[in-house]
Image (cartoon, rainbow, N blue to C red; front, side, top):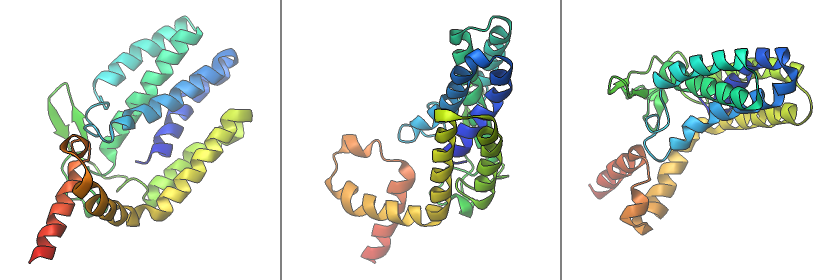
Length: 216
């Protein structure tokens, strides 16, 4: 699923707490937002493995949310909803597409890495790929209650990310061709091995195939 969907999910989960404890609403909502976003910072360093923990995040979040409900403070609130947002992200990715460059082709058996059992969880593909029509619909559905309930800077944050979601969904199907062309023509010929180590293998594999095809 795309980043705005995850961000909105983290905020929606924090919304009831924010309404019960309005003095901690900004902390809870922003923590949920960041929790929904941070796991995808591993995009170029072991995507859906380095920062995705579909087993450990939920366990830690259950404890943290209980503490925040009993002893609400800015610190307990931030930790609880960050962890719950990250847990939701990590688990939700199981129900999306795999790690292939074109996930609508459904060729990958890897969705999210389970560190506890040391194995990859297979994608369920309920949401076929990030930026798919159903992913955009989910983003809109999650954004609506946030826009209705919130105001000020946080509401505008939601609106801005909703705009990003619409734009991303509009160009999603052409991004692999653009990315592989840029990487194949600009990055691979000119980058050092240290830089190439951070390029996802799916891009390098595709460019290797393209180069092999062109050399025939």
